[in-house]
Length: 338
Image (cartoon, rainbow, N blue to C red; front, side):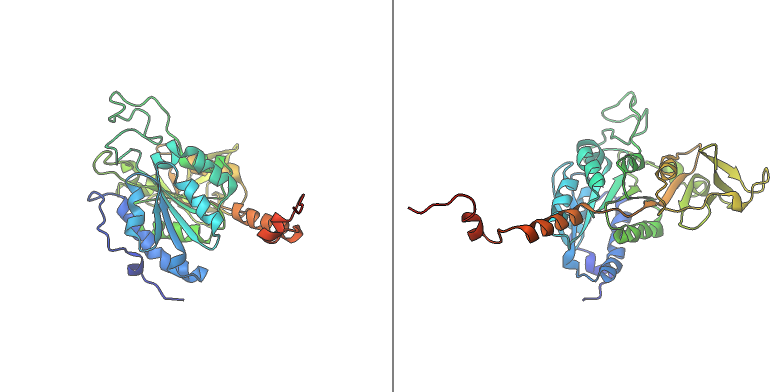
């Protein structure tokens, strides 16, 4: 098997996103992590497929030196499912925006998660339709003023984590375009997961929604506004590493270490592999300013995948069938000679 580097996954195409777009960071992370993915899985890069729908982020397959498929609006997950089920040996990565995946593609998105198809979904969330020039999306903030909501939206936005875990997803992680190392760590964890992996990347749209996640990406304050969850580690955050999360009466609560007798041992310890869907959902739904926004791998549990089920079913039916070729099929049932 070839030994790959970052450059082996860069295509010869000019990257045509706006300067400063958050999508660049996610693209770079994928190109950096795929050599490790191929090495760990023992595959050549010809086994890697990148699939997308429609939108700014969906240009990503052109910038990857892999096989790829730029599909139609909202249908990336359906195509990804077909590719993986038809050839389970392929390593499938999908790029979709918040509109592509959660609006027109919402049904495909939740049913792929329900089926637990072994695909890696990169959900680019900039809270706007960028390619079509600034309409509000399913994740736009309540009250957002856009081309299609000049007086402000009157809709509560989707929380992608809530959708994934509500569909009993087996893997959900979140990162942000400015968190370069975390982007790679999340992708590597996704590739190691057997089942549907959804990675939400909070990205910025410089042109139509600049400051998409400014309250979290601001360097001065982000340590107090995000918490990076790591398995086996206490849920601690803050500039001084003096804040943490506890459960009180079944609800999450932010506490300060050293106050009211709270010590580090009282804080929650993260376990993404636990099947505690309730706690993981609470973590995924935390939002600023009441809570820090959770980053990192929030849920990572194992269940049977859809394509494994299909392959097992085909093998079982084949082993019991009396029909093994077309000739057997033609001669089965009622036949006669004339």
